[in-house]
Image 1 (cartoon, rainbow over the protein chains, first blue to last red):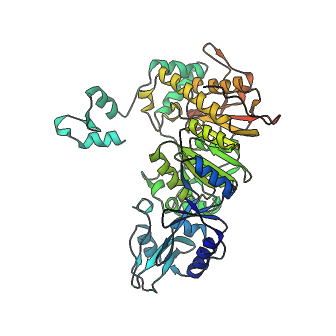
Image 2 (spheres, chains in turn green, orange; image 1 turned 30 degrees about the horizontal axis):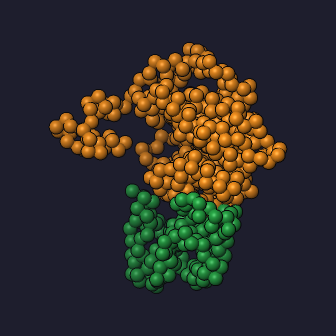
Image 3 (cartoon, each protein chain N blue to C red; image 1 turned 30 degrees about the vertical axis):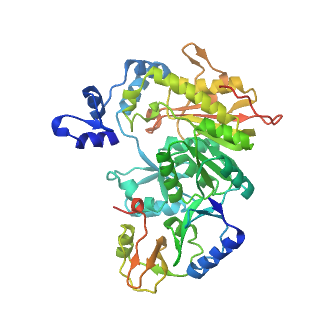
Length: 147
Length: 363
């Protein structure tokens, strides 16, 4: 676990803003491993968290909301839902069939610019996928797919 | 479940059954393959005594034990309002009943297909948590707020932790602990799906955790000890409990529960509240544990609380043991009273006097 400095957090917010229009990140941001970003909203201070980390076997903290990749930030399904009120950019509105296919874990044949896209059906946010130009690559975890 | 799957696939044609590469004895196989279990005479006798030897009541208890409980869900208010979810589910044809004053708790009245509740899109999106209503009651009793620091020391699979996070609106702080890595993975997955952001998950034996937290000087406003137990309240979903049940098991669990509860209690702030709960009826695992805490912590008292379902008071006498009169403020929930599962809940408060820690009772 690594608690990000405010300058590092600012960089992430800037990237989130450019990609999805997100303007605030009212969480402590932590990095687990190389890429996983987690959002923590608990009332423990950084000092307290460091003390806890030194003494306890911490398995997880806060919500895994994004993966920081070379080609940009990919929000997780739960990350998309966490920021749904703020997301204004790169939204793809799906039809019912596309939404069903997406939730089943299938890629979607949709042409768009190469970027991370937020998938939305009616007023429901269904996750985030990378567009290759011709299709959206599915990123819903296997255990979360509709069988 | 794992054992059963292995049994149905390994060397069945030879009538040899294995589990973890060990050949199982025919008597063990016979017991595992059974789906209906008869209660042991000692169990019947104990339940009869707990139900004041009321024949009708006893009959209802054992008849209900052979049926499945009603399905229920808890709306994840971190993601959706109860009304919004109700509309979505009713549009799919589900019939729902909400509990008075607790709109987030819903009983599913319609007969759904097996697995339909878990496979629904709304479940995958984390709009609700499939949870038995009685298992929601400890948090209903504890009522954590967004100012609290809460410890859930035996947290997996996370039903009560996620409920607490929702009640706290992802504010305050939760420390959710469990020992088993497999169960921690399930806990983590459930917290993710419910969008819980205010929780830290740790992996420790509850007693070791208490020692480490004491060393850090960390104390909690609210504590939940939902102790590992014999599961007499879960007969309807886990009839195998009857097979594994013995009075010896109750004694050893009681000892373990006293130790866990005593150690965790030392982490409670003066003025703080702790819920001690189990999904069992055995007084050795319930009132006896609470009495042990009272005996060793003079600054501790039992609090009254109300629940939105039917419950009965805790008992004050069991075999040769007498418990303090205030134990009647505890709640015993029997499965046949609500068509749910069985539970025991006690709410304790550390008096806010000199601000010192209670004694470590059980070494």
